[in-house]
Image 1 (cartoon, rainbow, N blue to C red):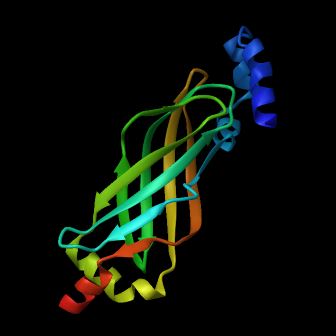
Image 2 (cartoon, helix red, strand yellow; image 1 turned 30 degrees about the vertical axis):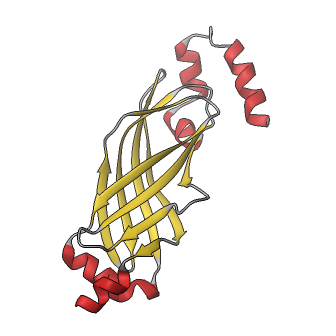
Image 3 (cartoon, one colour; image 1 turned 90 degrees about the vertical axis):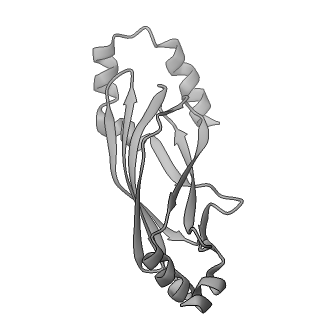
Length: 165
């Protein structure tokens, strides 16, 4: 509620010159006003170890700044069961001020890594590291080395793949 009240006040002050707003909201401050986490419900991380192995990560991004921001790109490293899975998210996505939105990141898992995950999924210690680049009307900014620990992926078809190897 407090965020919405602050946003309403800032909407009234949008006539302020950009140079003044840039001083109030430098790149570092803008990066702090963007929160990124896995969505809280409905399997936020899924690892499917079927014949064509894939993984899905659902992120919830909240823009707490008074400006609309656009996610330009993100580099994501998903450490799953001791192996590194890297992908890029290059779909430009806009986030309105004070709003939470979800994005889906999905990618394939190489066969060797899928076999390793199937054998070691029970000793799972997964986490995600992200580097993200954003744009807004004031300036571009980055959120670097954003870590999400304690990721508990749901594993599908791990027993079938583990029995094959």
